[in-house]
Length: 370
Image 1 (cartoon, rainbow, N blue to C red):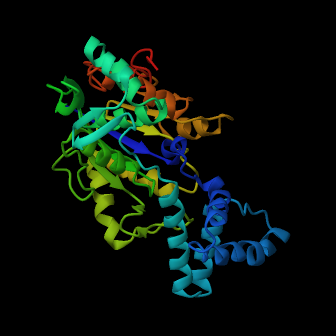
Image 2 (image 1 turned 30 degrees about the vertical axis):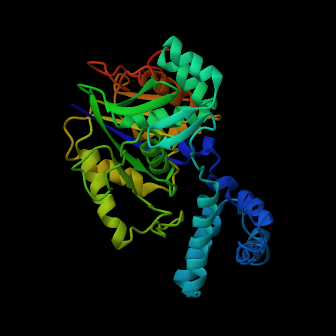
């Protein structure tokens, strides 16, 4: 069985409305405006930016709309000027609260009234008619999930579990079951650089929707797949590595880095989505370089990242030295990839079922139906 590892950057979650570094402050201000009482401490963050950091711009170039630059200056102050620890914790809380608010909540479609997990009364005549006609699964999914964006993320996650959904009409009730696909081609692991829990929340929703537990394996183990590793921590445990120049690996996150090292060390295919490989992230480069020392089975590296100016591709081309048949950079939006993957999974196919993975087939396995 092939081992496929996805490395996810901020561009993976952005289509769902989560902030990236460059628009984080603007989205935080929007949130503060919505509820100034709940997020009252945000005013301290904004005051630091507008009062203290504004002076920096009178001498040096500084992007005060970029949360990474702001927090990097703050961290330098913490190291050299010993600002109070409570101020540092306040900025971590700021990050967590903004990300948590903008993380979408997935709920049972209004067309279905849940009787129990996996069993529904159908409150939609069109859906009842489609079920009686025994139309292809793709037609049912399109009726249940009219939002292509949500649908594509849901079925991407389902594909990571090598699973499919079955829809059965029993009198006036719809039974939904989740079953594994036989003889999967690959097992999947996720290394995410994001703090959000988008994938975990989708898995939780699918568990309720189909009446079967669907859960990622902890980043501290590789005994069960799919594994998910949060290299920077996550909002659930309130312990995160802020996006700064230092990015020190804290002790209680170290085990996740070890797992990432083991996963990359046995990968057959590495797929990088929505990550621009910034110069400041040297530690990611060194993790990849260290892991390749124990990997003699790597067959391909594919990068999918929207690149308007060609600078991202240039960074990857200079970093990855594999021949063209083993390395591919695709300048497309993440939603295009998710649509092609979802098409396969919705039609009860595997995300990957080829005897080999040609350079770019993973991006568009075939023309999307959506």
